[in-house]
Structures are given as C-alpha cells and as structure tokens.
Length: 241
Image (cartoon, rainbow, N blue to C red):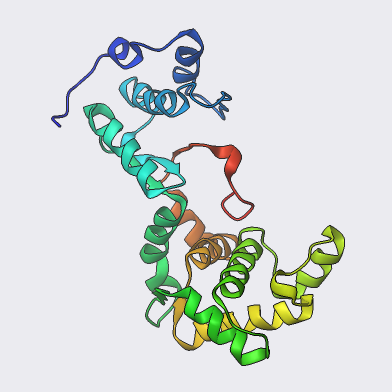
C-alpha cells in the first residue's frame, strides 16, 4: 500500500472525544485505559502518528512494543500507511531485545553470541532424564517447560524457587518436589550453556542484566529510544516490565 502524507486532522479523523484526547496527549507518561473492543490499538497508533506529525516525537527514535508477531505486523502496517510515522519501529518485546543484544554483544563479549534454542522441549526432556527417574511423557515435559518459563518471566531464580513455592503455596508440576524441579531447572540451564544456546526469555534477561550492570551498554541502548509505547501494558510480566 502506498504511503501518504496526512494532516493532523486527517490523523485524528474518526476518533471519538476520549480517543482524540488520548491521541493528542503526547507529553510525559500517559496511560490509556479502555475495555476490549474500544479501539485501544487504533488510538495508540494514531497517537504515535499525531506525535510525529506535530514533531513532538522523532519517528526514528520512537518504538512501539507489542506482545505478538501478528500484533507487531499489524501496527507496522497501520503506521506505514502514514508517511509521517513510517520510520517508527514496531516490535515484540523479544525481537526488540534481540536487536539490542546483537548491537551491543561485540562490546561486552569477545566470543560469539549464543544461538537461539530451536527446541527447548528437547532440552527439558534431557534435563528430566538426567536428574530424576520420573516417567517422561508429553504432559510432564510440557508442564515442566511451562514452569521454567513462569520462573523466568517472574524473575525467580532456581535458588529462590523453593522459598517462593512455600510462600505462595505453589505446587511444582507433575508431582515433583520443589528441590526436584530445581534440579531439572538447573540441568536445563546447564544443557543450554553446553550448547552455547539461549531461550527466548534469556534474551530479555540478558539485556536487562547488561543494562543494569553496564552504564555504557545502557546508554547505547537508550540513546536509540526517546519515546516508547507499549500496547496492552496490563499484560506485561515482571521480566517484560
């Protein structure tokens, strides 16, 4: 579809009063609260375009973060229809972080960047067989993989898992004791390290760690993003936050 220049009024055309108020609020932190089907994504997209059209934001320094590849593609499609916002970056949390990690990796490590694990399920299965005598079946592997994912997005390390389970009255999956799950979790991490692999959650964990521990890396990443919009922010995990 061809790009087209649009006036401010054309960008705001079709928005109701509440949507227009949200789309034109471009200074400082802004939170848009609305129910399902209320046009949140449409309003967010128009807000980005309005901010760029009025030169409040520089589109080359603006990023829109969404949860799924499909949602990011939809946002890019909407923004590309308006020339003023065509240079805005729209990405998932993981793809944005992966891009940032690849940019700074040569500055923080002499070795090659790890590969993205193609089959984490296989690693979970190998880890379970390695440290327990539990029966291995599809449900067990799936449940263990889900629990590892939950730990990572909740910022719960293997060392903290048993304490968190006790505090939350949380039962590890597949009948494992907390200590047994921790053994599987640690074995899973060791398997990845031995293969020079990381999983999707590791992408976010590594970038967060680098930004917290290295001021130069943090400055390099932040220098490219002056304005940030997160769609469906109420669904973010502690790790994504």
